[in-house]
Length: 323
Image 1 (cartoon, rainbow, N blue to C red):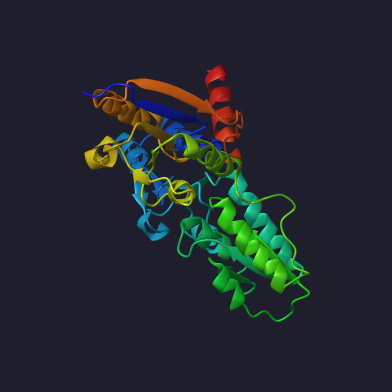
Image 2 (cartoon, rainbow, N blue to C red):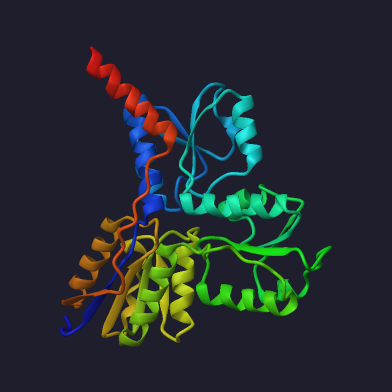
Protein backbone atom coordinates (compact mmCIF):
# COMPACT_ATOMS: atom_id res chain seq x y z
CA UNK A 1 0.00 0.00 0.00
CA UNK A 2 1.34 3.41 -0.96
CA UNK A 3 1.27 6.24 1.58
CA UNK A 4 1.36 9.99 1.22
CA UNK A 5 -1.65 10.26 -1.03
CA UNK A 6 -4.21 12.98 -0.35
CA UNK A 7 -7.97 13.52 -0.58
CA UNK A 8 -9.22 17.11 -0.91
CA UNK A 9 -12.86 17.36 0.12
CA UNK A 10 -14.68 20.37 -1.30
CA UNK A 11 -17.12 22.46 0.72
CA UNK A 12 -19.86 23.31 -0.07
CA UNK A 13 -20.98 20.08 -1.69
CA UNK A 14 -24.08 17.91 -1.81
CA UNK A 15 -27.61 18.92 -0.89
CA UNK A 16 -28.72 22.47 -1.64
CA UNK A 17 -31.63 24.18 0.11
CA UNK A 18 -34.09 23.27 -2.65
CA UNK A 19 -33.19 19.58 -2.47
CA UNK A 20 -33.37 19.52 1.35
CA UNK A 21 -36.81 21.13 1.13
CA UNK A 22 -38.07 18.70 -1.54
CA UNK A 23 -36.93 15.61 0.35
CA UNK A 24 -38.39 16.98 3.59
CA UNK A 25 -41.70 17.55 1.81
CA UNK A 26 -41.96 13.87 0.87
CA UNK A 27 -40.90 12.64 4.31
CA UNK A 28 -43.26 14.98 6.18
CA UNK A 29 -46.15 14.12 3.86
CA UNK A 30 -45.57 10.42 4.52
CA UNK A 31 -45.50 11.07 8.27
CA UNK A 32 -48.66 13.19 8.19
CA UNK A 33 -50.79 11.24 5.74
CA UNK A 34 -49.18 7.82 5.50
CA UNK A 35 -48.50 5.87 2.34
CA UNK A 36 -49.18 6.00 -0.49
CA UNK A 37 -47.92 9.44 -1.43
CA UNK A 38 -47.47 9.92 -5.18
CA UNK A 39 -44.58 11.94 -6.59
CA UNK A 40 -44.60 13.14 -10.18
CA UNK A 41 -41.15 12.47 -11.68
CA UNK A 42 -38.07 11.98 -9.49
CA UNK A 43 -38.35 14.38 -6.54
CA UNK A 44 -34.66 15.20 -7.16
CA UNK A 45 -32.28 13.66 -9.67
CA UNK A 46 -30.55 11.08 -7.51
CA UNK A 47 -31.37 7.37 -7.60
CA UNK A 48 -30.31 6.76 -3.99
CA UNK A 49 -32.67 9.45 -2.69
CA UNK A 50 -35.51 8.15 -4.85
CA UNK A 51 -34.93 4.55 -3.76
CA UNK A 52 -34.94 5.57 -0.08
CA UNK A 53 -38.20 7.48 -0.42
CA UNK A 54 -39.76 4.68 -2.44
CA UNK A 55 -38.91 2.27 0.37
CA UNK A 56 -40.63 4.64 2.81
CA UNK A 57 -43.87 4.53 0.81
CA UNK A 58 -43.58 7.14 -1.92
CA UNK A 59 -44.81 6.07 -5.36
CA UNK A 60 -43.01 7.74 -8.24
CA UNK A 61 -44.98 8.24 -11.45
CA UNK A 62 -44.21 9.86 -14.78
CA UNK A 63 -47.58 11.54 -15.31
CA UNK A 64 -50.67 12.41 -13.29
CA UNK A 65 -52.90 9.85 -15.01
CA UNK A 66 -51.06 7.26 -12.91
CA UNK A 67 -52.38 8.89 -9.72
CA UNK A 68 -55.85 7.79 -8.53
CA UNK A 69 -58.54 10.48 -8.61
CA UNK A 70 -58.45 12.57 -5.41
CA UNK A 71 -55.03 11.10 -4.59
CA UNK A 72 -52.25 13.12 -2.99
CA UNK A 73 -49.37 14.04 -5.31
CA UNK A 74 -46.14 15.97 -4.88
CA UNK A 75 -44.60 17.98 -7.71
CA UNK A 76 -40.83 17.56 -7.91
CA UNK A 77 -38.21 20.22 -7.20
CA UNK A 78 -37.81 20.82 -10.96
CA UNK A 79 -41.24 22.44 -11.37
CA UNK A 80 -44.12 21.74 -13.74
CA UNK A 81 -45.89 23.42 -16.63
CA UNK A 82 -49.26 25.13 -16.02
CA UNK A 83 -50.95 22.35 -17.99
CA UNK A 84 -49.90 19.87 -15.29
CA UNK A 85 -51.44 22.06 -12.59
CA UNK A 86 -54.66 22.28 -14.60
CA UNK A 87 -54.71 18.51 -15.00
CA UNK A 88 -54.29 18.08 -11.25
CA UNK A 89 -57.29 20.35 -10.56
CA UNK A 90 -59.45 18.55 -13.11
CA UNK A 91 -58.63 15.20 -11.51
CA UNK A 92 -59.30 16.51 -7.98
CA UNK A 93 -55.79 15.68 -6.84
CA UNK A 94 -54.43 16.99 -3.55
CA UNK A 95 -51.24 18.73 -4.62
CA UNK A 96 -48.16 19.52 -2.56
CA UNK A 97 -45.76 21.62 -4.61
CA UNK A 98 -42.07 20.96 -3.88
CA UNK A 99 -40.82 23.15 -6.76
CA UNK A 100 -37.57 24.85 -5.76
CA UNK A 101 -38.24 28.56 -5.11
CA UNK A 102 -35.35 29.43 -7.44
CA UNK A 103 -37.05 27.51 -10.26
CA UNK A 104 -40.32 29.27 -9.45
CA UNK A 105 -38.43 32.56 -9.88
CA UNK A 106 -37.60 31.61 -13.48
CA UNK A 107 -41.23 30.64 -14.15
CA UNK A 108 -42.45 34.00 -12.87
CA UNK A 109 -39.92 35.81 -15.05
CA UNK A 110 -41.16 33.87 -18.09
CA UNK A 111 -44.77 34.84 -17.35
CA UNK A 112 -43.78 38.51 -16.87
CA UNK A 113 -41.92 38.76 -20.18
CA UNK A 114 -44.61 36.83 -22.06
CA UNK A 115 -47.33 39.20 -20.81
CA UNK A 116 -45.30 42.10 -22.19
CA UNK A 117 -45.23 40.47 -25.60
CA UNK A 118 -41.53 39.58 -25.55
CA UNK A 119 -39.87 36.73 -27.41
CA UNK A 120 -38.12 34.71 -24.70
CA UNK A 121 -34.92 32.74 -25.22
CA UNK A 122 -34.52 29.98 -22.65
CA UNK A 123 -30.96 28.73 -22.25
CA UNK A 124 -31.06 25.11 -21.14
CA UNK A 125 -30.95 21.42 -21.99
CA UNK A 126 -33.73 19.92 -24.07
CA UNK A 127 -36.05 17.48 -22.26
CA UNK A 128 -34.66 18.26 -18.81
CA UNK A 129 -37.59 18.27 -16.35
CA UNK A 130 -36.92 21.86 -15.31
CA UNK A 131 -36.75 23.09 -18.91
CA UNK A 132 -39.97 21.28 -19.86
CA UNK A 133 -41.78 22.99 -16.99
CA UNK A 134 -40.42 26.45 -17.78
CA UNK A 135 -41.21 26.19 -21.49
CA UNK A 136 -44.78 25.34 -20.54
CA UNK A 137 -45.29 28.79 -19.03
CA UNK A 138 -45.22 30.48 -22.44
CA UNK A 139 -44.76 27.89 -25.20
CA UNK A 140 -45.67 30.26 -28.04
CA UNK A 141 -43.24 32.93 -26.89
CA UNK A 142 -40.23 30.80 -25.89
CA UNK A 143 -37.37 29.32 -27.89
CA UNK A 144 -34.83 26.94 -26.36
CA UNK A 145 -31.11 27.28 -27.06
CA UNK A 146 -28.32 25.05 -25.74
CA UNK A 147 -25.28 26.30 -27.68
CA UNK A 148 -23.82 29.39 -29.30
CA UNK A 149 -24.66 27.79 -32.65
CA UNK A 150 -28.32 27.63 -31.61
CA UNK A 151 -28.19 31.39 -31.02
CA UNK A 152 -26.84 31.95 -34.54
CA UNK A 153 -29.89 30.14 -35.95
CA UNK A 154 -32.43 32.13 -33.92
CA UNK A 155 -35.22 33.93 -35.75
CA UNK A 156 -37.65 36.12 -33.78
CA UNK A 157 -40.49 38.40 -34.92
CA UNK A 158 -39.24 41.54 -33.16
CA UNK A 159 -35.61 41.94 -32.09
CA UNK A 160 -36.51 44.99 -30.00
CA UNK A 161 -38.67 42.92 -27.63
CA UNK A 162 -36.51 40.02 -26.49
CA UNK A 163 -35.50 38.53 -23.15
CA UNK A 164 -33.45 35.56 -22.03
CA UNK A 165 -33.75 33.23 -19.05
CA UNK A 166 -31.72 30.20 -18.03
CA UNK A 167 -32.09 26.79 -16.48
CA UNK A 168 -30.84 26.98 -12.87
CA UNK A 169 -28.23 24.21 -13.14
CA UNK A 170 -26.09 25.23 -16.10
CA UNK A 171 -22.35 25.75 -16.51
CA UNK A 172 -21.60 29.37 -15.69
CA UNK A 173 -18.89 29.61 -18.36
CA UNK A 174 -20.93 28.06 -21.17
CA UNK A 175 -23.95 30.15 -20.24
CA UNK A 176 -21.85 33.32 -20.30
CA UNK A 177 -20.66 32.46 -23.83
CA UNK A 178 -24.26 31.99 -24.97
CA UNK A 179 -25.42 35.22 -23.32
CA UNK A 180 -22.52 37.08 -24.90
CA UNK A 181 -23.53 35.82 -28.33
CA UNK A 182 -27.17 36.74 -27.67
CA UNK A 183 -26.21 40.31 -26.79
CA UNK A 184 -24.00 40.54 -29.88
CA UNK A 185 -26.83 39.43 -32.17
CA UNK A 186 -29.63 41.17 -30.28
CA UNK A 187 -28.26 44.27 -28.50
CA UNK A 188 -31.63 45.16 -26.97
CA UNK A 189 -32.22 41.75 -25.35
CA UNK A 190 -33.08 41.88 -21.65
CA UNK A 191 -32.05 39.40 -18.97
CA UNK A 192 -33.41 38.54 -15.53
CA UNK A 193 -32.93 41.07 -12.73
CA UNK A 194 -30.65 38.58 -10.99
CA UNK A 195 -28.86 35.50 -12.30
CA UNK A 196 -31.09 32.45 -12.83
CA UNK A 197 -28.29 29.93 -12.26
CA UNK A 198 -28.72 29.00 -8.61
CA UNK A 199 -26.31 29.79 -5.80
CA UNK A 200 -25.52 26.11 -5.17
CA UNK A 201 -24.67 25.41 -8.80
CA UNK A 202 -22.38 28.43 -8.86
CA UNK A 203 -20.68 27.66 -5.55
CA UNK A 204 -19.91 24.07 -6.51
CA UNK A 205 -18.48 25.14 -9.86
CA UNK A 206 -16.33 27.80 -8.19
CA UNK A 207 -15.06 25.10 -5.84
CA UNK A 208 -14.12 22.82 -8.74
CA UNK A 209 -12.15 25.64 -10.38
CA UNK A 210 -10.35 26.32 -7.10
CA UNK A 211 -9.35 22.71 -6.54
CA UNK A 212 -8.43 21.79 -10.13
CA UNK A 213 -4.84 23.14 -9.89
CA UNK A 214 -4.36 21.19 -6.64
CA UNK A 215 -5.45 17.71 -7.72
CA UNK A 216 -4.75 15.02 -10.29
CA UNK A 217 -8.33 13.74 -10.42
CA UNK A 218 -11.82 14.88 -9.42
CA UNK A 219 -14.66 12.58 -8.41
CA UNK A 220 -18.13 14.12 -8.60
CA UNK A 221 -20.76 12.24 -6.63
CA UNK A 222 -24.10 12.41 -8.41
CA UNK A 223 -26.49 10.55 -10.69
CA UNK A 224 -26.18 10.51 -14.46
CA UNK A 225 -29.39 12.51 -14.95
CA UNK A 226 -28.29 15.28 -12.57
CA UNK A 227 -27.57 18.33 -14.69
CA UNK A 228 -25.64 20.24 -12.03
CA UNK A 229 -23.46 17.17 -11.33
CA UNK A 230 -22.66 16.72 -15.01
CA UNK A 231 -21.66 20.37 -15.23
CA UNK A 232 -19.14 19.91 -12.39
CA UNK A 233 -17.43 17.17 -14.37
CA UNK A 234 -17.31 19.38 -17.47
CA UNK A 235 -15.96 22.38 -15.55
CA UNK A 236 -13.08 20.29 -14.24
CA UNK A 237 -12.36 18.62 -17.57
CA UNK A 238 -12.22 22.05 -19.21
CA UNK A 239 -9.22 22.84 -16.96
CA UNK A 240 -7.41 19.76 -18.26
CA UNK A 241 -7.87 17.70 -15.07
CA UNK A 242 -9.62 14.31 -15.41
CA UNK A 243 -13.02 14.11 -13.73
CA UNK A 244 -15.62 11.37 -13.39
CA UNK A 245 -19.26 11.28 -12.32
CA UNK A 246 -19.96 8.46 -9.87
CA UNK A 247 -23.27 7.45 -8.34
CA UNK A 248 -21.53 5.74 -5.45
CA UNK A 249 -18.41 3.82 -4.43
CA UNK A 250 -19.16 0.97 -6.83
CA UNK A 251 -18.62 3.29 -9.82
CA UNK A 252 -15.05 4.19 -8.83
CA UNK A 253 -12.53 2.41 -11.10
CA UNK A 254 -9.10 1.42 -9.72
CA UNK A 255 -7.45 2.29 -13.04
CA UNK A 256 -8.40 5.94 -12.53
CA UNK A 257 -6.04 6.04 -9.55
CA UNK A 258 -2.91 4.94 -11.38
CA UNK A 259 -0.27 7.63 -10.89
CA UNK A 260 -2.68 9.84 -8.93
CA UNK A 261 -1.35 11.48 -5.76
CA UNK A 262 -4.27 13.81 -4.96
CA UNK A 263 -7.95 13.13 -5.49
CA UNK A 264 -10.54 15.87 -5.00
CA UNK A 265 -14.14 15.01 -4.17
CA UNK A 266 -17.30 17.07 -4.53
CA UNK A 267 -20.98 16.20 -4.82
CA UNK A 268 -23.84 17.50 -6.91
CA UNK A 269 -26.70 19.32 -5.23
CA UNK A 270 -28.89 16.20 -4.98
CA UNK A 271 -26.24 13.71 -3.75
CA UNK A 272 -26.47 12.46 -0.13
CA UNK A 273 -23.43 12.95 2.11
CA UNK A 274 -23.22 9.27 3.10
CA UNK A 275 -22.20 8.44 -0.49
CA UNK A 276 -19.27 10.87 -0.17
CA UNK A 277 -18.25 9.26 3.12
CA UNK A 278 -18.29 5.80 1.56
CA UNK A 279 -16.01 6.93 -1.26
CA UNK A 280 -13.62 8.53 1.22
CA UNK A 281 -13.48 5.24 3.12
CA UNK A 282 -12.76 3.38 -0.13
CA UNK A 283 -9.94 5.77 -1.01
CA UNK A 284 -8.41 5.51 2.47
CA UNK A 285 -8.27 1.74 2.15
CA UNK A 286 -6.48 2.26 -1.16
CA UNK A 287 -3.69 4.45 0.18
CA UNK A 288 -5.17 7.94 0.31
CA UNK A 289 -4.39 8.44 3.98
CA UNK A 290 -4.47 12.26 4.21
CA UNK A 291 -7.74 14.22 4.20
CA UNK A 292 -7.90 17.96 3.69
CA UNK A 293 -11.05 20.09 3.44
CA UNK A 294 -11.21 23.07 1.10
CA UNK A 295 -14.06 25.48 1.84
CA UNK A 296 -14.69 28.04 -0.89
CA UNK A 297 -17.87 29.57 0.49
CA UNK A 298 -20.22 29.13 3.42
CA UNK A 299 -23.83 28.30 2.56
CA UNK A 300 -26.66 29.17 4.93
CA UNK A 301 -29.67 29.26 2.58
CA UNK A 302 -32.92 27.76 3.89
CA UNK A 303 -36.34 27.56 2.25
CA UNK A 304 -39.70 27.32 3.99
CA UNK A 305 -41.96 24.36 3.38
CA UNK A 306 -44.76 24.75 0.79
CA UNK A 307 -47.75 26.67 2.19
CA UNK A 308 -50.14 23.72 1.69
CA UNK A 309 -47.93 21.53 3.88
CA UNK A 310 -47.33 24.23 6.49
CA UNK A 311 -51.05 24.95 6.85
CA UNK A 312 -51.82 21.23 7.15
CA UNK A 313 -49.21 20.86 9.90
CA UNK A 314 -50.64 23.88 11.73
CA UNK A 315 -54.15 22.40 11.52
CA UNK A 316 -52.83 19.10 12.82
CA UNK A 317 -51.07 20.78 15.76
CA UNK A 318 -54.15 22.90 16.60
CA UNK A 319 -56.41 19.84 16.49
CA UNK A 320 -54.07 17.85 18.71
CA UNK A 321 -53.85 20.70 21.22
CA UNK A 322 -57.63 20.91 21.49
CA UNK A 323 -58.11 17.23 22.26
